[in-house]
Length: 259
Ligand code: COA
Image (cartoon, rainbow, N blue to C red; front, side, top):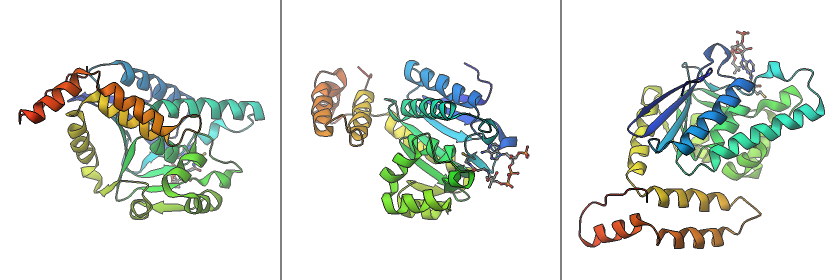
């Protein structure tokens, strides 16, 4: 499919989704949000897509936030509706059964930091900068940022960033555990593809089970241990579990089919 504000390319089962508004530092306007929602539906449904990368176009920004020009004059109800919609799109990323990695290639501010945090993990280029500067605008994050920042870096560090509108660089983000790796900008996609190619060679339903169980840690309506029991048990009903265990015993490489 083609999208107004996204560029996509599919190679070896990995779809690279590039947010493409470089003149506005890839700010998330409603068209971008709607395109992200649609591309996520494609990721969920298309069996040719095994995993995804989300990144920003240009060398300066991943995403510099929600598009501030769309906020002026909006009512309380409109503000709540924006947050509900944004959160539901980012939940779609977080709960996707296929791995999604954010390649943070510059500013990841506000909604950009929230987008990166909704991905399963993050890799940053050396020039990346992270922050939730909403208080500069008389706002707070509305697309899950207050929750996921606390989950990822802890309450004290998160509240300092949220309340001060401060930014942290890639090295600090690595130290905080916000990103898994920091690499040169030109190596960013290569690094993500290397990791995803390895994950794509594993049993897809088992990978999906890992995502579901890990996400359950942060869902107070669920007991994560019970989710794990269920997901673990379900693996025993898959052809891939039979194949994986048999291949180990026969000292050969498993050939997974995702069934
Ligand atoms: N929403 C709308 N437009 C944005 C934007 C955003 N979140 N972030 C950047 N832009 C636009 C700028 O308005 C500018 O557009 P223009 O050329 O038509 O004037 C263009 O992107 C380039 O940004 P500019 O501010 O000129 O770049 P800079 O290098 O001087 O500063 C930032 C970079 C990221 C520090 C600065 O753009 C910024 O602070 N952005 C807003 C960050 C923010 O508050 N995000 C949270 C939103 S809820």
